[in-house]
Image (cartoon, rainbow, N blue to C red; front, side):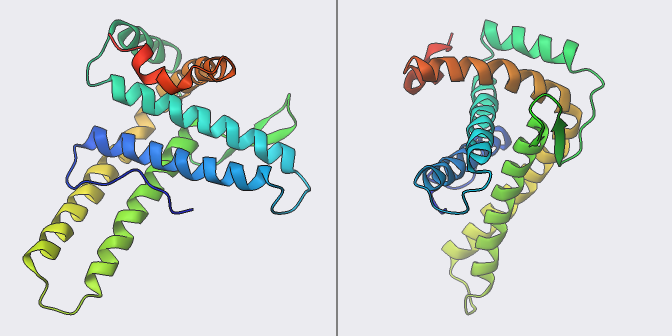
Length: 199
């Protein structure tokens, strides 16, 4: 599943975080298509489809929140405040949590976002490894690409370190915006979702 949002060089930490969740959402949508086509084991397929749709919605929600953070419109400030109130003191660890009502284990919102960041970091590290296998001396362009990738790894790792303190806010944002996105999806409005809540 190699589809990725186009990468255009050095980026800010917030932009890298947005790219990470968008790339992960793209990958999960590709898995969703595969599962819908009936590829793979049939046992637990419907549950897996539900989990994929749920995780995609949460990634879209967090990406939406991060993009709006550059402008901080009124709805973003209100949601940020709610996340601070209701998510205060919540601590998360990567992994699955049990859903008693559904009788299944599902990734927490924190884990979904964390895995997106990890996947993007690993992609950058893979590119660095490929550059490292090039025969020296490296051209100036390849050295520049290597420096950019190293900076991206550092910035996104810093963003990932900050996630733990944001675990409660992530849960609130993904719960609220995720449901809004699902409703918009039922109405066929998600293609303009990012514009709809611009100031």
